[in-house]
Image (tube, rainbow, N blue to C red; front, side):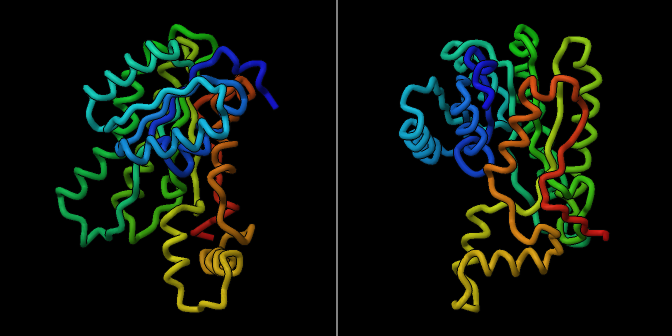
Length: 265
């Protein structure tokens, strides 16, 4: 596919033990990159590493438990990953979850927590790895964001606002880092298959529906034109494009990975 340009590349993926992060690590390894990943849970991280080593036995892989909201832990992860694999030329900021709440039900503490999570899960890794990126050829940062950044949901008011801020942060960093050759882009994901949706499927009322029928029905209710949920692999391929020289003239941009979802349509 593209392995010749990644054989001497080190990539870093936060939130790499499951979902989109794990799919991104898998794709990068398959294309010859060295990959460092982190996650909060040491147990889940070890399970992910075992899975990845089973698929890529010759891969150069480094994993470390790390809370991206702890600046000291992230700085240590940056030092340790460089010692293990060399300086990073790709950083994928993928950590972070959403909060379900309306304006009325979101108190000051919840606003502070949500804004802190969304911004500092990007700021801490970017600060820690930027010196490495600046020393490499064709460096790139990719931030995994949500379609909520452009199409807010009233039942996720704090997350929608924080996601919009992150979208603008990507554009600001892209402008500031461009003179040093560091590209910064993002993806905006819609409904992606995950453990959350699988758990809802297991709790479904209509037991006659299989996963395909149930998820297609969900996609119809959510007005997704492609009629299905996306897969982590599909999001990973968009990340791969933005992280590699395939998108060498692209910075400050976002790819919509949502199946055409338009909530305000």
